[in-house]
Figure 1: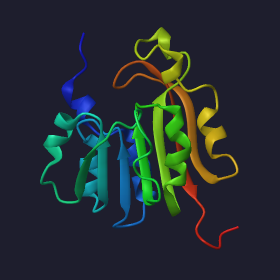
Figure 2: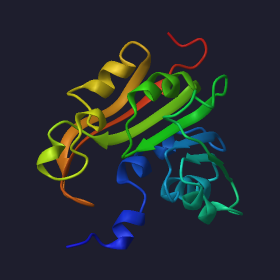
Figure 3: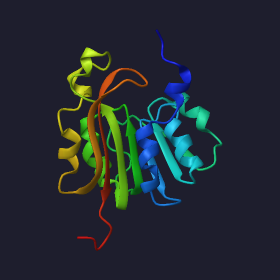
Figure 4: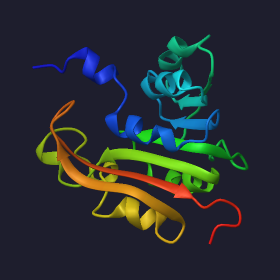
Length: 180
């Protein structure tokens, strides 16, 4: 049985829950954005979104939407294309390429928010992805931010919607300049 199209197109409840932590009018990097469900949601909140994906055709539906710029980039086949850039938020859902984890955290401006949600080890019981390269190990997102960002929320759990899966999720914030 296929998943209802509207559920797959809706923004992640995790992203919606933590979007208010992003500075009003701030800049957001939506990594591996696909058709832009989060870019659309965040732009509608008044944020300036840079939506990046390898699939140029997926990005064409975002053309002309206020608050959204797009960039086609092979994030896995070349250097991090945002070196030296800083964003008020980095949003990633249902995507994992471990060499990008460090650059994504480094791309956070002071006060910047990391909102990350993807599949966890054990997901192979429920379907794709099954490859361990695309599944987070226990507490892997916590280990990524430990000592660097303040964790607002973290979950490692089973979900039913939009399909049965094991997921890890984190919302973590970069310290403001002068914060201890």
